[in-house]
Image (tube, rainbow over all chains, first blue to last red):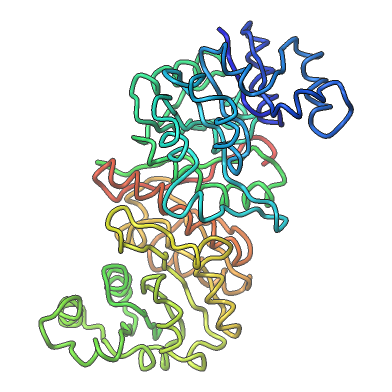
Amino acid sequence: MKIAILGGGMVGQTLGGKLVANGHDVTIGVRSADAATLSKPRNYAETLDDWVKATGGRAADFATAAAGAEIVFNATSGLVSLAALSAAGSENLAGKVVIDVSNPLDFSDGMPPFLPAALSERTSVGAEIQKAFPEALVVKAFNTISAVVMVDPGQIPGVELLISGNSAEAKARVAALARDEFGWQEIVDLGDISAAQGTEHLMPLWLTLYMQAGSPLVALKVIRGDGA
Amino acid sequence: MKIAILGGGMVGQTLGGKLVANGHDVTIGVRSADAATLSKPRNYAETLDDWVKATGGRAADFATAAAGAEIVFNATSGLVSLAALSAAGSENLAGKVVIDVSNPLDFSDGMPPFLPAALSERTSVGAEIQKAFPEALVVKAFNTISAVVMVDPGQIPGVELLISGNSAEAKARVAALARDEFGWQEIVDLGDISAAQGTEHLMPLWLTLYMQAGSPLVALKVIRGDGA
């Protein structure tokens, strides 16, 4: 399958590496400026160059990556996701499943980051992406756990994949991909894309647990009493 | 033990009812205006009047309730908690454990409510209370589950009480109270009061789960992989 992963950071590289290893044709999309400097030893473009050499995956600008893909992951920072997806081009997203892995974490004040109100108070990045790209089939998923757990959920026994989106068919495809490519066994469908706000809002507690444990192998699981 | 519960809504009445049943001297504190109308059949003052008659607990204005108490619950809406605690009087909170059960849920746009940025973006109600009342020993707790579960955690097998606060001694007292009065068995100490932001941020996901299940018997549990 041809897969685009927008965003060349740790999350994009981890997802992409696993999908290449599984035999897929994966292109990581980055900003044009980054794509032009892929061979230069400079910030994350350097490690993306290494990723290409190590995995056999490809790197390109956002639009080139998205144009040929059957499925698109958004693994950019939630702060810039709308801009990144605009650069990818709405025509390259229309009709496709767009898996939004992002969180709007603002590190400008240092640690811990915060969720800026414009992207969180009455909305979410997932909901804003769906609104800006109405022909894309946006599914929020994978944003509540560390990248290492996204592609290897067995690292946290009982971990659940929390997904939301307006298209039941798109959610079923993401659930199948999560199961077949990464080994996810427990999937919780939270409803339409408005539920993305809830999963993005998990970040402050998740970061607290991560910093307290000194390990990213922490997660939050839905539990229920009788009748719920 | 003399206990004040600030806030006469469903949460305050549920906590108070259980504590009266356990033999404690409980006073629910409400605004002076509400206290003056306790015997009048009007909004929640009516049900609070019923609560007094049914339980044998007492009701008073915020300051009267807090003045005599050894321990103070804040069960007001997070939107007005700072005002309610100011009305209770900093001198009536100094040196006392203040258990902050609140969430800053703004229902002014209808359902679902949202967390207003001023009380959530870079802070939390719990942290703001501790800042405004530095001599109080603020412990954030009980704000991530329904009132019925606060006093009967067995309704959700495996449920955890998430607590945070700057005083280890105050947290130990709250943990003992949760265990002895309500039956809590699993308590997760998230660290200092800055962690209150994470638990208040659980509300959007919790409300999604609640509305989806049609039951308040839903919660989020911390799970970990090896070494975390």
